[in-house]
Each structure stands twice: as structure tokens, then as C-alpha cells.
Image (cartoon, rainbow, N blue to C red):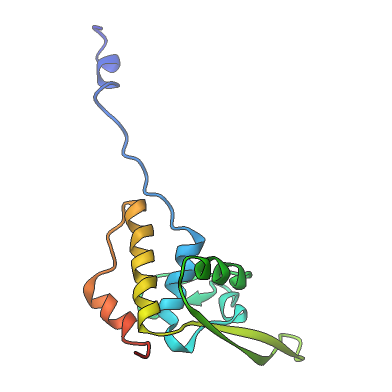
Length: 140
């Protein structure tokens, strides 16, 4: 092993890139960020970037919001919903569903689940000041 390049390959490792955020975690963050105003599928497919977070840096684009809501409900996150009529791009009325996290208890569960996802990815947990802002949007 006189070749320095061969010796270095055993000691130098390239850092592993961080794991990307999952779509379920993005949907959870979007619902937390939207507060009691909630989200519809039209708001998550707006061009060019979908829903722009208000309290967190980033955006969420999704055309199948109901699938992510069902996945979150399966993880014990209570999500409220109501039907609304909105005007589609072509000008005709269309019925959509607005989703939002139900209350403070559900928002705390959502933050705990989000922190679980973040910890698994090696990301920092949601900070206390951000937690207070996000949780303060929901009724007790």
C-alpha cells in the first residue's frame, strides 16, 4: 500500500446528502402552516409553485391532497373538512373540499409526527418559537 491514493480511500468518505422531505411531511407542514384557513386542492396546484408557506420557507405542490389527508388521518391526526364551490379556470363552478387541522390537540400531534419525520431524516426539530406560532392558529 505505497500508493497514497489507495491509502486515502479508506480514510476519506464523502458526506451523505440529507434525505429529501417526504410528500406526507410536506402535506403535514402545509396544513400546519395554513392554520384554520385550511387548504383546497386548487390552492396546492397554483402555478408556478403551489401553496407558498407563510411561516416556513418553501412551498407545497400537490394534485392529490385528499390522499395525503387520508394518510395523515391514518396516523391519528384529526383533520376537519367542508365542501366549497369555487370557480374553475374555465369559469364554471366546481365543488372542492377544504381541509384543516381540527384543534390544538391535533396540531400538537401533527407537530410531534412532523418532528418524528424530521428526526428520521437527520433534520433539526421544529423550534419552540415556530411551534408557538403554528399551534397558536388553532382553537383549544
